[in-house]
Length: 404
Image (cartoon, rainbow, N blue to C red; front, side, top):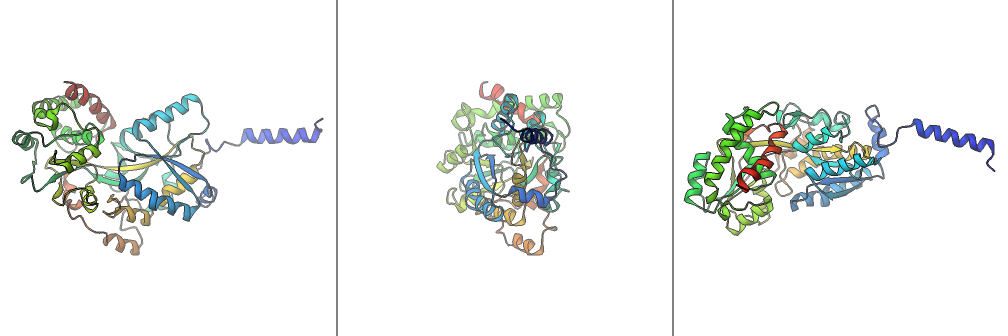
């Protein structure tokens, strides 16, 4: 038999449970940072990230995860996934009514950020609570805006890169600077150029789309169907006119940059490309690319963008995820991945705001030996257009070029 005071105690506990928000729905915006970092100790953060580059994977496994464990007693568990996989998983969890997400943290930007905001899948705003938020270069328009969307504290800048074309200088004497130059070049050198059907290939096509729409700024603002149709139809006509001189006669296209890079190394392609303007340096330093490899940005310009970190709205480990992200923003972690031998990822920090000691250490990072200096290509940096342009390019490249 249950005694009356035990029953009363049980009812109190039940009421308490009903009136206290669960960890998954808890709003931490008024919680002091000291409390957040204390709660984070001993927790495990599951981070879904693209794992297509061995150097990046090594940075995470050999430096980031051990440092986070040592400094904060947090275990960083990395699972593979990107873009649609993240959106699909969080959507499925929401539809199933799961109380907590299997993902705590995600590496995102652009259309993934757009889609996650659409399904209310991101926790935030949280970035302004991070102590290292004050070091971010928020005056930089390539950082405070993601595919024309204000980040509004729902994703935290992590790195900044610009698309660059990589070529073998032993084989290519004069690089094509315009679309007209490229058409002449592929006609004279059939089979030595192509574009990927992946994120990097579509990012190059966005640069072409902006050029054909009128140049820098022409696609700024919300998605414009009329502008898209006019510029994209001109681009599909151009591509179909020259693709017969692409690799494999333009009947197939590489599915990712790893395949592009391998074809380049094998000599089948004389060009490859990267969303990271310094990747040519780290690939040469690894001994993967030939030393004659160089990178450049054509005169029409290429997309510069920032990649970000988000937290799942139903994460049960938000405090730990915030602690991890704050460390990833620290001068130490940003400096480490800025090295070409480590990753060569551009920092999102305003170096004038970091302590003098770290300013000096950033100055000592080896410069770009085989890739152009960032200051030299900044005038050719194009803003990402609205995310709908990327979504349409993926669909229409298949429809009007691959299957045409």
